[in-house]
Image (cartoon, rainbow, N blue to C red; front, side, top):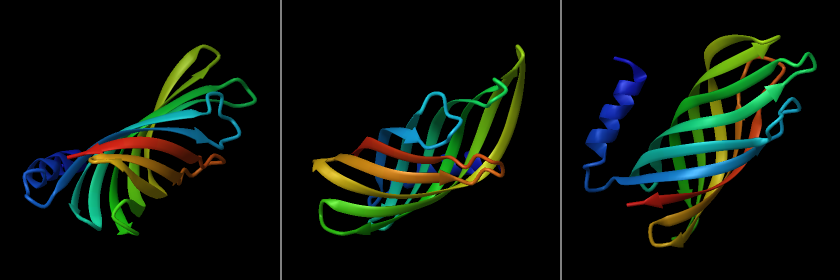
Length: 164
């Protein structure tokens, strides 16, 4: 069974639990990668929070376009699945940490020739979530992606999520 099928089935069954909280959100971020042409990143995500301290999350991340000195253009995006641990500080503020896996695809264009590369790498995040209104949160998150190359993007993002 593929990991995506497993996560889908888990989301489906857990979302009907009386104690589970489902959430969806969007984050915009900035990468510190030196080769980044478009410094903006975009993430759409959803998760199921089983308890006040534990959730699973699935997201789509667009890391933008990169250029190196030889004018090789690389566009990177992927699907990330994560385990999330929360530490509530108060009724309105949570700190959280994520450990995940990013299955990414990159389109390389060099001298007009396109080539696609796929891989998966570990991701690590630390963040804070602030309740703005009932079921609506503002989030700030710092993420690093463990890519085995000269590039290891670090991303600082701000986002909003809706839970029900």
